[in-house]
Length: 193
Image (cartoon, rainbow, N blue to C red; front, side, top):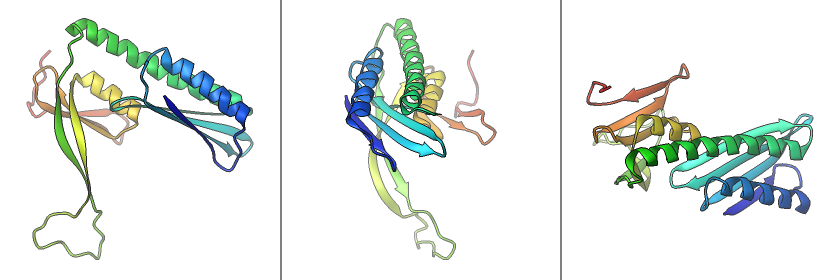
């Protein structure tokens, strides 16, 4: 796993860097053997030290955790505890899922993801009425359960996740509502219990 350790307006010494690499590597390897990348950013907030950790544990799986404390090592340890808790929960759910379906790999749908230019108040709408595409990327839509989709949305700190519902094969969306609850869009219109 590649680990990047940075400081915002503060110098990260070799001893702290080694401490981060050693502890982050051992905690992540407990749950995922092939995590991709991790970033740790240290900063100061008034009289406190802050540590923000982002771990890319696998395809579409990003965990984030942060903490502040008087000591920089304590801030990192607290943030790492949050990451470890997320990894432990995800690994448990993943193991439970594989026990339930015999460990079979689910298929993914290849899709295109676009970034559209924001419309300004004074801008003219194009004659064809189509928005301007400023980026196009490959995306995959996984076949998962609703609870797995919510977990992935929370872990990635994303406002929305589109997925193929394992129960019936249809495309579904879960999203974070302004009131903090999770919304679920299922075009089938009925839940099967």
